[in-house]
Amino acid sequence: MLNIQENIILASQTSFRIGGPAKFFVEVNNVPELEEALKYAEDNNLTYFILGGGSNLLVSDKGFDGLVIKIRMNEIKVDKGTNIVEAQAGVPLARIVNSSIAESMTGMEWAVGIPGTIGGAIRGNAGAFMGETGDAIESVKFLDTEDGQIKEFSKEECKFSYRDSIFKQKGTMIVVSARIKLAPGNKEESMEKIKAILPKRIALQTPGTTNAGSYFVNPVTEKEELIKEFETEKNVKSKGGKVPAGWLMEKADLKGKTIGGAMVSKDNVAYFLNTGSATAEDVVMLSSFVKQQVRDKFGVQLQEEVEYMGF
Ligand SMILES: Cc1cc2nc3c(=O)[nH]c(=O)nc-3n(C[C@H](O)[C@H](O)[C@H](O)COP(=O)(O)OP(=O)(O)OC[C@H]3O[C@@H](n4cnc5c(N)ncnc54)[C@H](O)[C@@H]3O)c2cc1C
Image (cartoon, rainbow, N blue to C red; front, side, top):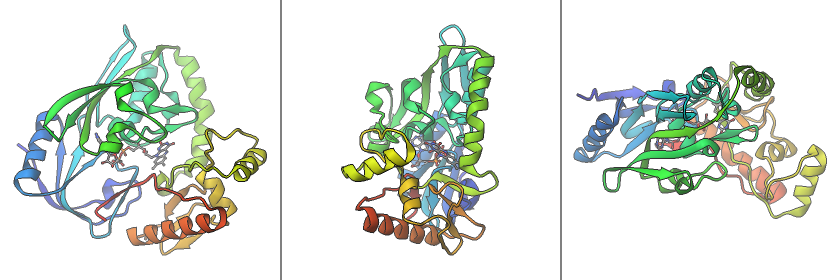
């Protein structure tokens, strides 16, 4: 039996700590409960929103006038024989990293310190430090809301690319579980990799701040001069014409730019911080300002990586 709650404040469900109430809110622990929640939405003519860990999300100040379905499906099976981790969509990425290392499997170390669930990570093909969620995916089970069927896609069918997948493109497929194929490893070597990544992670995230990770995806530009300038300045090669959004923002003098309670981080320019009292409106205004400045200065259009709910 579902426990449908009313008027649940969403700020506490997100890493940004911003957002008004969900008119209806439900947590689902398995596929039948997910199906029941979707049926409830349909029967009551409600729009719904799938919530994972809320770490890539900006919720509007007025909240969400529908049913928020929080994915709590949390089972994980680690098979040392095949080096496969089978995880339900609500399993935190951190648990996948820890469980695989505990069983001497390698391939997920790059994800250490990234919050959120594997379901959200698959949808946005979360990545860092040369790793991406899609790299290790063998297959993904999802509920296709167009016909209500549970289906399975191979890695190729998931169409993973930079911060993108078929699940993001279509928006009608709810990830319910994934098979992650890792390689036989060694705990000590994995811990060494983690030790090398953690200081970079801490530098990126400025622990103690509230944010939603990088606010924008890194844009691709055809402007040869800009790419060359980036490559010379940072001594790295641009991949396919991509330049970091944070680099453009820093060059546009946006470090520390503040609107209301929302601020472009001074430590990691790619992040927007909620300095304590930010409203979603502050964040949206800051985003518009940053986009306009970067467009005016470099002719590059930034796109949000953070997803919006209730706007
Ligand atoms: C401090 C910090 C650091 C971060 N670092 C990184 C990083 O290095 N690299 C990176 O890529 N990201 C990073 N992020 C962003 C975020 O952690 C990832 O994007 C994460 O994968 C989002 O997962 P989530 O479960 O929190 O998704 P949510 O924020 O809950 O949702 C994001 C989107 O996914 C959808 N979604 C969620 N679950 C499902 C599902 N089961 N099926 C279908 N759709 C679903 C939601 O509807 C929404 O549209 C960071 C965030 C923070 C706060």
